[in-house]
Length: 558
Image (cartoon, rainbow, N blue to C red; front, side, top):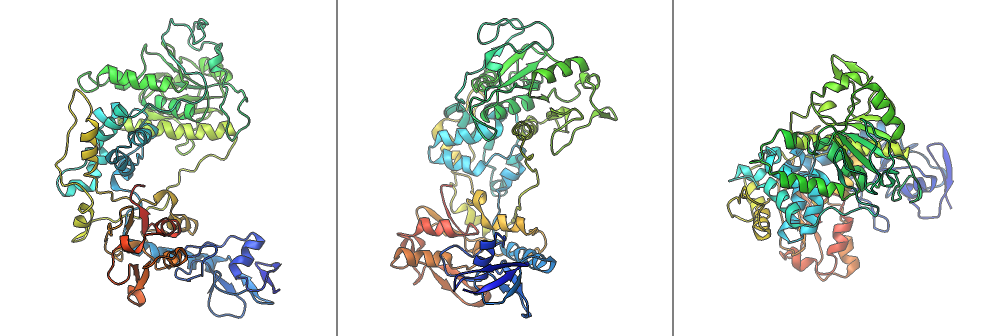
């Protein structure tokens, strides 16, 4: 059994172990991309390279046997630079968008291609869940949003953009409402109404929290047992940002109340948008759906002074200010201001008072776009959730995102090959698209996203190595799509020739399986003997998708 040293630590490993296995035995993290446990190493990426004393060149840890007396360095500046450069070269060739342009352009980051695939297949519940989770008010936004996503839609370069607003409006209208957490539902309360249990609300701007539904009873989660009781979160402002934050907090199991000095919820959606563009009944139904999550609305009440805010802080586990752009009362709340503007940490959504957060137009320039306010409210809710759980605040650092940029000759045709040629369908002012019409419009989507974006080893390793997709430009491959398999899509321009799928086919006993084609820099994976992907993958499709590290092989349905 060889004994060796890695980063100054001594370890003894079984005969035949690799340096990667020795490092893992010590708990040392070495990034890998083309390696999988139980598969033969291919050393196609070289991201796991390490230094060995006495060797002039770095060697791949995944394939280098551990030997007696080796002195190995797994992490230093040279190694980190090597790994970063290797990943940047791989990213420079990657022929695909990590996220579809429409999703990147949406301030709320709605996964539009996934929603379209769900609508196209008739999975209304899935489509509705995606729309509600990201947009909170998907029907209202579908009627009034100016559609930055549609302006970015790649289909618009060919004929007309996909009617994305009409799609999420239809998904919400025909799909089930948001799932209700397992605790008492909330209600919309006017200034004179009682609370849920019939207890009269305490008069004043900041009434006492006497209702059991506002006890802060959480439905379980990372903080502690399901019967843990804390004070409720109070959101001040029932506009898009406040509604989005309240819904997001309720979905995470926190009791939440919303205060607003108007007699109805909706903010500028109610006061600043005409009924001809947004019928009140549509907005009221979406507010009622938020109340059904357990959110209590206390309307006709707001904040007027620092004393009001201090009293509210004492009655709440956290306070979120979401009163909208130009709220004059902000200057009277005793919070830090700069040049007449509330001082807010843009990443953490925090103000100068502990436990007081801010979102929407009061915190940042939303350009009077409701969808931007919704995104701000959801982001603030994530920070509040971490604050209440005493966890590290979620980072807002963007993941590695590869972008195709302008399409080359023939690439639009490749995308169009999997889309309907039908003209754009428009929703009527009187109602949403019917499910068959929504499915037809969804079929126009080019699906130019990456189906593996949420579980992509390439993005994960590139981020860990600090690699930039913009380091090298003009070197990417051409987009080609193999859609001959009924369930799997293959994009050769994303393949790094790791051979994991070839091994998976052999293990599954495929008659044809997959094989390497060409040589050198041109080597690619494909079906042998000019057969189709459908003929090659009759047994191992799931295994191939599971081991592919770059999304080159992915499920069509994802």
